[in-house]
Image 1 (tube, one colour):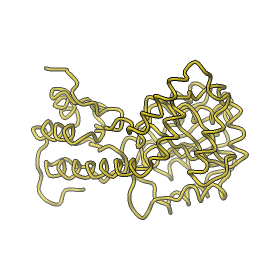
Image 2: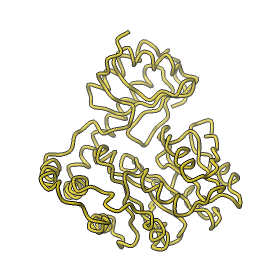
Image 3: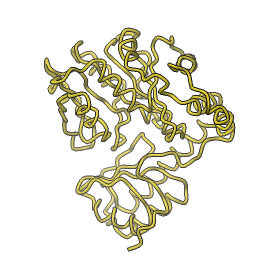
Length: 340
């Protein structure tokens, strides 16, 4: 079996390198690499706040969205407290819980791959300090609608901080999308987590941010690492915000490829529900283990959860065509009427 990796589709990375204008800004920043960045990333916070149309006191920045999540846990969790999240989800959350001495409380997904909001609420008790929602969900791509999210937030006890991970929100489409910025005033225990790694294609530079009530943000900022956001990353983010139109067109291309990939796989006989991230989720009882083996043989690196599922990052057209060719020999076409 040839194990050469031709297409990296395991980490939900953008298939596109930084835009030329972004690379130019990065090169200028590299020329000043002998100088320290800002002690705290105040300029970047102000730029992100203006872009999000909120006050700077509502923004916290960290080393990727996972860095902001860690800062939140450091701010609100004491050893012995618990942290609830749907499982399966982003692999870092149980690791972060261990780092701050929190008891992890994984709550199984519903059979259709959605986060079970009722079960998550039931899992909350007096020890719970944080509950995590991913919207769109990683790895299944499912979406919590605006109505369901509002109802969930109203029922979460005030001593529990809601960490709403929106790492993939730029790829979501539809009329049921929550307006999370509008929820911040009503829910001071909510932190909305976003990143420049996915849609903006800056995964290697590690910049994420959170939006929350000023009181919560102030607590989180006490755990901001001095000199923690490097100057090259800062320059790249600022340039990316100036190039919003170009980046949106790139995201639209990824979304179109996602829908093409899903449509073609469904035509091959795979059972795939609509997703809202930059990936496609294949779930058991479809032959996901056999699919993973076929992809590896074809030089395609995907995220394989043995016996459970297969997450395929949406790549460029060539990579997606390689996926379709590899999986065509594994799927078993079924009669019309199969679930979407």
